Amino acid sequence: MCGLVAISQLGGNVPPHAFQTAMACIAHRGPDGEGQVSRRNGRLSMGHRRLALFAPGRTGDQPMVAPWGDTIIFNGSLYNYPELRAELQGLGYPFHSDSDTEVLLAAWHAWGEQALGRFNGTWAFVLHEASSDRLIISRDRLGVRPLYACCAHDRLVLASEVRAVVAAADLPVVINREMAFDFLSLGLTDHHHKTLIDGVVQVPAGALWIQQADGHVEHRQYHHWPDVEPDLTAGQVAAELPALLMQATALRLRAHVPVAAQLSGGVDSGSVAWALGQHDFNGGSTFLGLFGYGYQAGGEAFDEIPRARTTWQKVAPHVPFHEIRVDPTPTMDDLESFLWAQELPVGTPSPLAGLRLYRAMRQAGATVALAGDGSDELFAGYTRRYLPVLLRDALRGGDWRRAKALWGNDELTPAGALARLAWSLPHGMLHLLMDRRPHVMALQDDFRNDLRPRLHSLADHQRQPLSMMRLSDVQGGLLGQVLRYADRNAMAAGMESRSPFLDHRIAELAMRLPMSEKVGPRGGKQPVRLAMASLLPPEVIEGPKNRGLGHAEQFRIGALPLSDVLTDLPLGADEFINAPRLADALRRAPTDPRLWWPVCFLLWLRQVEQRWP
Image (cartoon, rainbow, N blue to C red):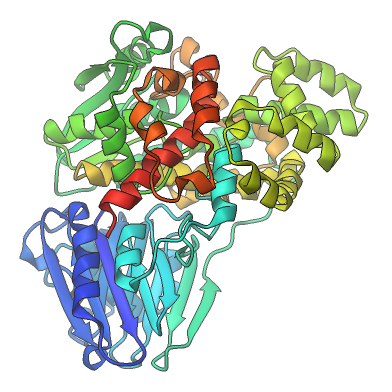
């Protein structure tokens, strides 16, 4: 992964200070090099910070300029670039490096938009076509690599991170109240093209934007997910998954730098570990082993290492296994560092575990890390989220037999079922219920009352049937926030994160499968569990989705030393948060994970006030 900044100015030249400030904001994304170019007679500036994964010498530096004059800045990796390069060489294109960036330039020149469908990889890139003076902007199918945008002051700004966009656009930091309400009431992030900063938006996954020479921007999608195939079964998908997973893992091992992999006690990272165990490392990349995350005293109930060790011993005992153990209660320094890396609020402190793991892998010498991200979102792995929806849908349809079967699953609790059913109540009753929750009571009354119409919109989303969640959870908040966690954590440690489950072939297979085949009375993620049933330990296959990486941290909010941030509120915080009521809620319910949302919001606002450009 790398970082990029592009500023296209319609009138006059790009302001040098705005561009340089934005470049400084993404310096951490590229420890191996920096480059800048100017085009359109000073009206277009393109900058890049490089993390060298392929062609680590100067031949892979960016911005990269093709012999025909096109210029590109590119964040990501094209895993199948050797095959594409061979095809392009057959068309007469010469190559001067072993870089995937050079292949991307030639592929666009040869095939145009059709090149995007040939790529197996992750990307966000901005390409200036010399012949047409167009600016080509694209993001990969799932949005694994970040790209944010802003149009202000006759200026189009694109960058890998929000802070860089704010700096490049010379934009005042104004909090989007609707996005703030979504986060403070339900912990939602990355679920919308808007961000918490007014004027800054996400370029959508699968986007192809084209800015013409006159400044007009055409917004298109080059990729659309396939429709559901009603007759496709979990068993049929499970039969295809192991081979696809092995292929996807082998592609993501391609790098000219050392590689490591995460291993928790679950099915997802265990499946990747199995695929790694089938790989012959003798003639390929340097693989440094599997890294597990666990706790010191006090976090034993959530410790992933025992099951991770069991998986390692079964699927890949010939590779090293490293154990990382931490205190289950994070320090404020830990959280401040984590939030600075994430740059926007996060729905749970659990991803702090990912940051710690990336740092440990980087310290061991790795620059690429493999993980199991995306499986839960693609294959409906959040059992406690989906079973109440299934129950509600069964009750609505009068399917009492199915409702009874669902009730037999231990992860469908009365509290979970009632919480889901509550979203179907009339809006007035829903307001009464929400207003009694401790994290909602901690919000300012005026803010909460002003945003009541927003709650109606969120309720409509929560009422959607299970079948509709297929697209919304992949294109909305669930996958989006996981991808941001991984990207920012990895970049803060100077690494690139890669997940075989995010291979577009696996994603398309998952999208074709009906939701009813992914989750049911036996729980969620059924195709993956079926596929790996004979390949992973039984306790991993049958284990409930109630733990996961960093699970202990989310229950320690009340143990944090928060007196300073609660008594000396960041600028503008009192518009959203009632600090005395939040302090009282933390005393009364110190283990309520939802209280993290207002706490995180305050900590983030303090960073915006003190450290943002």
